[in-house]
Image (cartoon, rainbow, N blue to C red):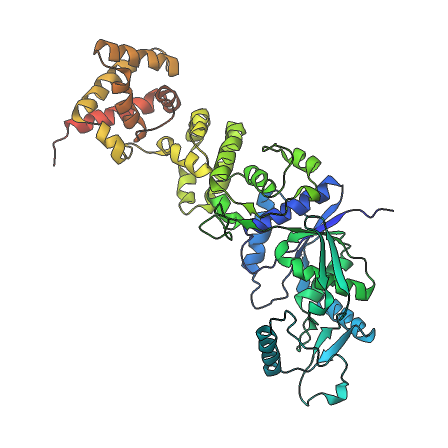
Length: 480
């Protein structure tokens, strides 16, 4: 009988949910969902000094924003320390662990000696077979695992293939510290077993841990979960991913204006391939995902590719839904509350009407907000440097004359206003651009915008004429 698939995502709450953690969570989620299984969430908070409540909140929030749900309650590793100690005592009783009274000074000395001799095994096992009656007075021991001294430890990894360690090179790792607190290495094994985890999918920085943990499983007579160790993510230049490459928290990508669906799609293609397909719906990801399709080489993070993918998803998103994404983003921006206050029902209608032109020019929600600022501006609207250069005294006078002709237009839509502006330019023997560029500057305060006749239609007759007259009136003001 085949057990149902159970994966787990097990972050340490010492900081935000970084981009690599987001990919690991996604791969666990996809593998479980594709097989009708479960993905569990465990917060590995055994490091009490570095674990923080804000970090836990950021991890949970980041997963929810990415659309990655988990099954059951969140498990906090620290709350299970009594169970971890129980298993350590069981290993002691079975002869698979021992009390070690080595002092910190002795440990430092033996590690320096081992490194000097080029040995990977740093602890010399001096308390493996000594009687506790020889223990120095007043010293609280740690409990160490009695690792096998000969033979091999083998992992058949779903990504890395068959990997073999010589047992003579593996240390007797600490299971319980001298204060009775369990180490990460013991806690992970006990928790994965007790939670029924069948597949461990994690970064290959845990690969050496896999050998040590398998030895603990074997000593306890427990079945070892299937393992898949993911190559880490590198920067475009092949070096370790850093902040300059984009090694930010998932929350930072939200604040930069990326859509969760786009980030999910980008992350799934970091190291996993399904033919030449680049764009995946969530349903397609679930149907296609499998562990052996993950490459062994580090994936390379490419911000330009992420931006391009995000632009694709923005163009696919219905206009009203895209505005809802913007409004959901505003609480996470420094000036977001002020922007939110400016989105009146009328401006919301205008923004949705302008969305087809706006989203063609934007790759992130931040760029979309920037492009829509002409809708949210109060009169007289601010004018940037490039737009101001277009609004010469002659151009301002031209805008006043154009306003008079536009006011007489019967209908007010992009086709009707275009007809008026073209006729206006023809009568003055001017190229359309010579009128359209200062018109754009007057209406939006910028030198670039969606198509100018769409802008006129979006702003409406009253607002458009008011902005043109504001510009024309400035032409008549005395210079300072």
